[in-house]
Image 1: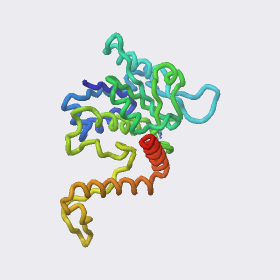
Image 2 (image 1 turned 90 degrees about the vertical axis):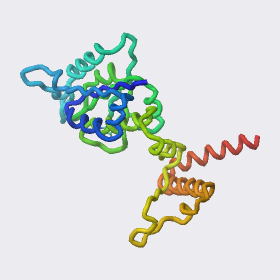
Image 3 (image 1 turned 120 degrees about the horizontal axis):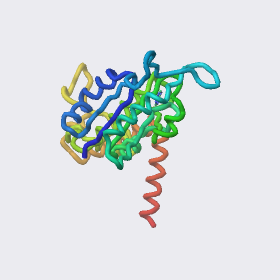
Image 4 (image 1 turned 135 degrees about the vertical axis):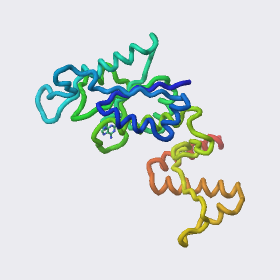
Length: 244
Ligand code: ADE
């Protein structure tokens, strides 16, 4: 399956630089993903080519105008199939939290469209009539929707078949089993007096695997009490089911 991704942004160079680099770029080279970056300014009206305007009802900050976004969307629709059902993603701090579960779900779709917001907000009609999903990347505010959109995109693209090599495999990632990832070491065995845990050099695969699992559990317990609590509950339920 080829994933088509359209990104509507007033800052195409920022987006292009990222999608052309590293694993996102490699996914396009392998034709697993096709990126289309749309410059929002190309859909504005002369002579001022404005993408924003003052808010109705007053208040501080500028609001992104609806027309350029709707026109960019129309252009994408013209090149799509009759029965297309894209997911239209608007990254916003007031969106639903974006997690690995959302990444997995989005990864099953064939067409994703990202609308990158700026300024105080975007005209609500875009959100009501075009957008299907609104996601927040965390409880903080960044200056535009590009970085959040690229984060979401990266999380989705790396899950597509054929993107990661076996050595980069997503299977032991943080969150892949409701646990954070643990520590990793590579050569040299000793560096500036800092050593690698003996167990990793022991060659006992079973013990190494147990040790890694314990480190993942430690990491999760210490850093993410919220995830740990959830895991404890699930494990308790599984135990109760097993014991009838
Ligand atoms: N735009 C600005 N801040 C954001 C956030 N935290 N998540 C998603 N989009 C944003």
